[in-house]
Length: 191
Image 1 (spheres, rainbow, N blue to C red):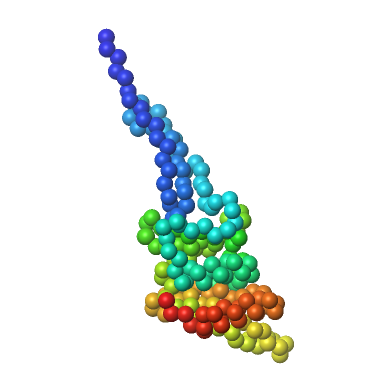
Image 2: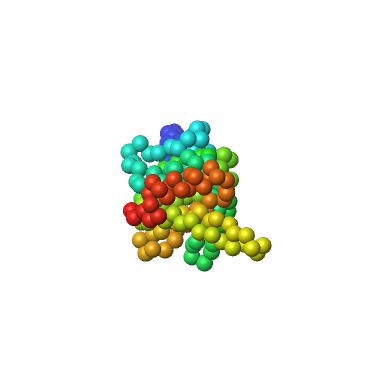
């Protein structure tokens, strides 16, 4: 009597999804019909350092360099993102985590800023930014006073806003930082 031996291959798959390392569990290929263990079992979103992490083979565009300066400023911004039928607004620093990656689905270069616990993430497709503007304006308040608004707008090739970063800190130090960006790059940066 001859016994049949079933070949069983167990695999641990590791892949990159949207620039993040995803490791999947065991997968059974062949053999009996026992259930297999599939799906993500661990995720590594960022390296342990809060510093900026970039792909080693990627070049830093001017748009990414400017966004890196926003990240390095450690200042809070009112982040406004306009989408199809929705607007998202929140106030946060850009970080402390920052990572550059390439989307495996679209090939778009992504720059991601995240809070320490990754409960907040802001992803920017940096190659879609064609213009950045730095605008300072006065907004009247109901009490007759005014508030200085320092706004950076990131525009796409159609001239439509992708997002705006409004400086949420009105201290002299923050104003000097924004004015320095305006002096260094001008009111409009064409990319």
